[in-house]
Length: 206
Image: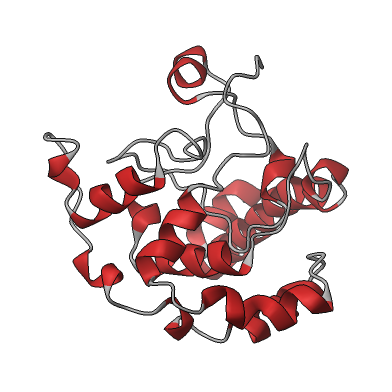
């Protein structure tokens, strides 16, 4: 009896074989990435998020924005012409977790910084169809009233990220709560959106 026939007739052996092959395939993809320096080296002017933008990022995740918006401009002519320079791996070294996404119900946001004013973003988040009539994005009116300081412990968050390699100074961590004073969740989310993709200029030619 051939080995192939034995695998087909023995369910346990077949499952074991599938797991072994899958493990080998996974290691082939993962191991090279662990030693890829470009994934750990910041690109251009990439910097860790400020306390306000970091809070805004948590709100972005909490509200499920990454379900409809990607943050990864692929190196395709159509995407570069529409969104700007394609995304580099070094731009995401301070993103935990990554928010690349795979579904574009809405446009990609990775080169959003500076494209619109803060006021435009506020209006868009509170009433999307007032600025984009064909938009199907839901409104987020509660962000205007909720204090940004209520989104977790910002100092503890920054301390954890510091241990993971983010270059926050002790002074930045101590000053974080004061930076959030008087700000709403809407302010924090807009601050985050205005930092997306600033490490590479929109006018840069790839």
